[in-house]
Length: 264
Length: 326
Ligand SMILES: Cc1cc2nc3c(=O)[nH]c(=O)nc-3n(C[C@H](O)[C@H](O)[C@H](O)COP(=O)(O)OP(=O)(O)OC[C@H]3O[C@@H](n4cnc5c(N)ncnc54)[C@H](O)[C@@H]3O)c2cc1C
Ligand SMILES: Nc1ncnc2c1ncn2[C@@H]1O[C@H](COP(=O)(O)O)[C@@H](O)[C@H]1O
Image 1 (tube, each protein chain N blue to C red):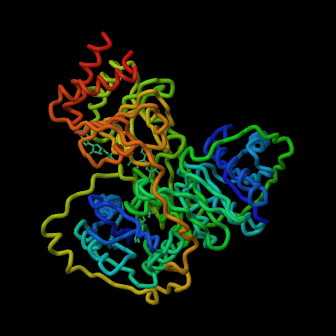
Image 2 (tube, rainbow over the protein chains, first blue to last red; image 1 turned 90 degrees about the vertical axis):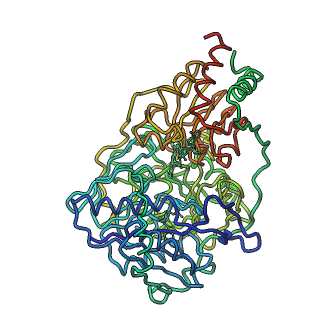
C-alpha cells in the first residue's frame, strides 16, 4: 500500500499573519514551518504503517509551494515519510482553492496512491476544503475531519463528528481522508531523523512535469478574485488582567463579575 | 438563468437550521440579482411534507433525489448535474461540515470558484460578492467570482432563516441522478451517535467552558464543575476535549456543536478558534482564562485573564462561593 500525505508550509504561528495590500495575497515572508495540522496526517500514516493491518511500502509527502517550501518536506520526512515531492513553479503563484486542488491532484494521479491523507486545515489558508477538491479530481471517496481510522480489508472504518453527533463511515480504498487534530498525538522527530531528512529523495516538479494545464492554475487560472481587503469591524478591546498575585487576580475577577450583576 | 441553488441538510423530519438560513439568504439574493432560489434535498425517504416545508424559507422549487443520507459525495453528483443541466449561477451553503465538503466537491467538478467561512454576501451589478474574514478574523476579504458557477459556503449562523413566506406554491420535483462510482464507495454505518451524558446547556445563564488547556479529563470534575456550581451555571466544552473523550458531546459549543448566548461565558483553557467562537460569540459577557497572551480568545473576550487556570480556578471558585454565600 502506498500512502501520500499532503503537507503545506505555512508562516510560523508565532509570527503575525499579514496580507500584502497590493497583491491581495497572504504575505508569506518570514519564518516558515510545516503546517501543524499536517503533522497529524503524517502520524496517521505512520500508525497505519506500524499498525500491522496493512502492508505499507511507502509514505510520500507531497507539497505545492515556493522554492523554500522544502523545509516543510524535510520536517515531514523527519517525522516518517520515506520520500517527498515538491510541485513548484512560478506559474502556480496566486492559485486559489480550485487551482490548488487541481494541481495537487495531478501530482497525486501520477503517484497512484491507495490512500491520500491531509490535515484538517492549513494554518494560514483555513479553507478546510482541499481534501474534498482533490478527491473529486481523483475520483475517490473521501471524508474530512476524521478522528478515528481503522484499517480493514481494502477499506477504512472512519469516525468523525458531523452536525448531529458522531458518524461512523466505511470507505473503500483508494480514498482521500483529511484527519482532525484529535486523531493522534504526533511524535517528535529523533535527532537522527532530522539529520537524515535532507538525504532522502526529494523530487521537484514543474507544472509541465505533472501535466498541469497552465491556464488552470496561478492567479490567471483562479476562479475567485479578491475585490477588496478591509479591516474587521472595530470592536472594543476587552480588559486584560495579568495574573501575578492570584489572590489579587481573583479579587479583580469577582469585582468585575459583581459590577455586571453576574453574582446575584 | 441566474438562479441560486442551495442544499437543505436534514436529519429525521427536520431541516438543519443553517440550511434554512442559507435558503432564506439565497431567496433574498436571488431577488437582487434576478432569478430564483431553489433547494436540493437528498435522502433515502424524504417526505413531501419535508420538501414542502422548505418553501416557507423562500425556495420556489425543491428538488428531491434518492441517495444515501449524511454523506457529501452523492449530493455533489446531484447538484453538479442540476447546475450543468439547468444553469445556476451560484451554489450557496449554510455553515456546517457537509456544506464544506459538498461545496469543495462542486469546485472540482465544475471548475468553480469557492469562498468559505462567508459572513455576508453582497449583490453588486447583478453578481454576488462573498465577504470572508481571514487570518483569524484579522482582515476581511471581498471575494468575487470569475465565471459561473460561484460556490459560497457560509459560516455557522451567518445567514438568518426567515420562515415566513407562503410556501404553498413550492414545486417539488423528483430528480434521478446516477451516482458517480466513487460516491458509492462510502457507507454510513452509524449516524449521529451521541457520546457521553445528555446535558442541557442551552438554558443556562452561566456557562463555564473547558478546553484542552485543562490538560486532563479530570480537569472538568476538579475545576470546571465546582466553579459552574458556585456561579449557578452549567459546564460546556470545546470539540478538542469532546473528541478526546474528556467531556460529553452534548456540552460542545461551536460549529458542529451547540450555539449558546448565556449572560456569562467563562472560557478556561480555550484558544478561541473560529469554529468555537461561532457558537458562543453571542454571550453577553465573555471571560477568558488562558496562559498564552496571544490566544485568539482575548480578541473577543470582555475580560481576559492571562494566567494558569490551575492556580486561578480553585481560588476563583472559593471567592465566588464566599460572595454568593453558597
Ligand atoms: C470543520 C470543523 C468543525 C469544528 N467544530 C468545532 C466545534 O463545534 N467546537 C469547537 O470547540 N471546536 C470545533 N472545531 C475545532 C477548533 O478548530 C479548535 O481546534 C478547537 O476549538 C480547539 O479547542 P481548545 O480551545 O480546547 O484547544 P486548543 O486550541 O488546543 O487550546 C488550548 C488553550 O489552552 C491554553 N492553555 C494550556 N494550558 C493552560 C493552562 N494551564 N492555563 C490556562 N490556559 C492554558 C493554551 O494556551 C491554548 O490557548 C472544529 C474544527 C473544524 C475544522
Ligand atoms: N499547497 C499545498 N500543498 C500541499 N498540501 C496542501 C496545500 N494546501 C493545502 N494542503 C493540504 O490540505 C489541507 C487543508 O488545507 P486547507 O483546505 O487550505 O485548509 C492541509 O492540511 C494540507 O494537508
